Length: 358
Image (cartoon, rainbow, N blue to C red):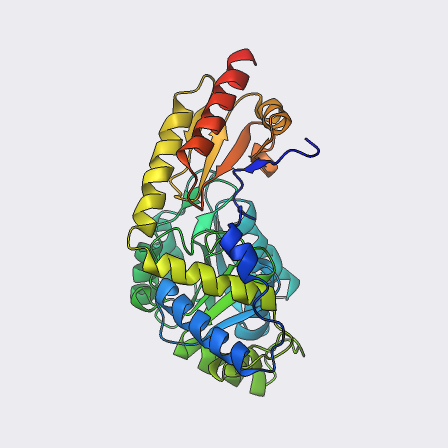
């Protein structure tokens, strides 16, 4: 496909607009009033999108960087940690907790499903946990969990447990309110529903979580870090300054995309309609079965998924492969940004042709 523009239906990084590409050149230096102004505006926009009144940390790295900073700075040594595992990315947080030496317990659900409310409630009644890690949208299976219901159960049964949410594939796509749900820490990234290039993690703490991060740091109950010092990053964000050199082009692009999301009253409704349409479209194609309730990604089950993936690429259409248990029988279509009807029609015609001959 050399020399030909590809059409990306990927669940991150997502295609970026010409407007975003242009905006990336705006900020050149972070020791200026311009940086303070942009940071203040982006912070305000992200607070509205995430649903929080507390400062939002924006730093260089991936969503996994945000997770590691959280595990390092908000989980004291040898803590009891519960991780809800329903796919590849949620299992990563259990692995991360064990790397830091914590006592990690998992509630595993079969791929394509999520933890039941009863199983969660029973685990919280039987054991005591310092924190619980929830992946809002599991990208590997295209499943969005009932986050508000989970949070309600946790606050009712185990109110001292910190609620930590991986919102990497949900912010900007799914409805979420950090303050209303009672979430203590939420991390996400720039390259998915926020429609920016990869390169920045975004992390928000509740007042309770920021207080605990400071206490843990002062009492040396966490792993130290110069760059990923959570209280220092939080303090810098409050003052709209940079803790270390920030991802300036991404900050500029976030200024553009976050304003656009907030100014478009039908943003979330449009993505929901698009998701329903794409899932229905795929369901009617020979040999395909659409799985997952996520609004930003669909898991397509097909006996010859790898062949379909390769054939789409030959036509200049990029989708995501299946992972782990589903690597041979699933490919994934991302729809975290709005696509034109022409682009969706191109995908549909290609799938009909390819699946009709495989």
